[in-house]
Image (cartoon, rainbow, N blue to C red):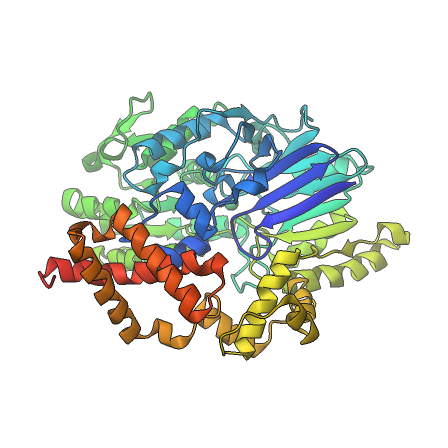
Length: 580
Ligand SMILES: [Zn+2]
C-alpha cells in the first residue's frame, strides 16, 4: 500500500509538502514556504532571524516530516514549493527541475541582504536535475506542465502496487505553441502524455486548487495575446512586467514583438540571464545596460537610445525604477507609452505593492493594464482535467477552500461516471485525510475554550463526553463547517485560550515595567531585546502564562514570543527617547 500524507498545503495556497511512503521507501514532493504564515509575523521592519524561527512559526516544514526520506522532488522553483533548502535536516538528494535556474537563484540569494540569504542548501544536500519523461531510480517521472515558472513538472510515482500523480502547479493552456513547448520544455505536456498512455491508471491524484472559489476572470494565454495586440496597435513603447522565472511568457512576448515589428529589450538582470542560458530559446532580445551588469553576448543598448517602437520586458519589482529612470533620462519615450502588468498572482503582500505601483504609473503619466493569464487552471476546466486523468482517489492541495474543492470533486465524480458509463471501479471517490490524534485534540480544545472561557484544562475525557472531540474530527475531515462561535473566538485571538486581560494594554504596560526594571538592574537596558535578556524575558512571560492563566505548556513559549514582539517596539521607542 502506498501511503500519501499531505503535511503542508492541504488548506493553504503554498507550503506544499507531500510525504509518500511505499514499503521502506519514503519520497517527498515539494517542501514549500508558507507565505500566509510569514505575513502574520513579519513586516519590512520585523524580519526572520533564522531558519529555526521560521520552522517554529510553521512557515517551514517540521524536521520530523523528513524522517527517513532522503529523496526530495521539487515540482517548480517558486518558493512556496521549493522552500528553503537549508531547512532539510539530514543528508538528502534534492531533484530539481533545472540546475541552471537554481544556480542563478542561489547566487542572488547568497548576495541578498534580506532573509533570502537563509535559503541556500547546506553541504550535505546533493542536487540532481530531473529529466522530463524519464522514469528515474526511484520510479518517479517528471512530466512537463505549463506554469508561470520555468521549468515546471507534474510528478508521477509508479509505486509497488499503486500509482500516484502530483500535479504541482499548472494551467491547461500554455503561452507556447505545441512545437515550441516540446522544444523549450524538453517534452510534451501532461495531458498529451496521458492521452498517449491510456492504460495508465492513476490511483491517487494530488491536485492543486489555487483558483477554486476565486472570482478572477478566466483569461487564457490566447485571450491575453488578443488584448495585448490590440493595445500595441495604439501605443508605443510597451513596458511589460513579468516574473523572472516566467520564461514561457517572456518567449511569448518576444515573439509578439517580432510579429508586430517591434524591437524587444530586457531591463532585468535575472530574466536576461535565464533567457540567455536556455539553449532552446530561439529569440534573443537586446538588454538595457543600466539594468544588466553581468558580461553577456546579447546585444546592448542604453536607456537614451531605446527606440520608441519597442517592447521592454522588466520584472514586477524593477518596473518602478525603470519608470523613474525613463522620466529623468528619456522622458519623450514615456509620452505614448503603455504598460502591461502580468504579475502578481494575488498574494497579499504583493497586492499592497500593486497599489503603490499604480501610483507611480499615474505620477509618470503612463496608462497601465493588468492582463494576466493565471499560472493555474480555472475552476471550469476541472471537469475536463478529471475526465482525462480519471483517478480513483483525489486529494486537494494548494487551496484555501478545501471543502468547496472536495464538494466540486464529489459532484464531478458522479458526472464523470455518467459521461464515461464505466464500471463502478473506475468511478472516483473523494477521500479526505484522516486527522491525527494531536490535530483532533488541538481543535477540540479550541472549541472547548471558545465555549468555556473560565480557565481550566479539559481532559480528553471531558472533550469526548461533551462532544467536542467528534465535532473537531468532523470539521477536520471537512464534513462539518467550523461553528460561528468558534470561528470568532479562535481567529480573533489567534492563540490558545488566553484570557482577555492578558492582552489588555494595562497588562502589557505592567509587564513592560517589570521587564525594564529587571533589565535595568542587570545593566542590560540596551541589550534588553537581544539574545540573553530576551530569552529570560521569554521564560518569565511563559511562566506567567502557565501559572497564572493556565495556558497549555506546549504553547506558552510561542505565546511569550508574540507578547514580546509587541513589547519590542515599545521598548525601542522608550530607549530611543531616553525614557529609560
Ligand atoms: Zn507556482
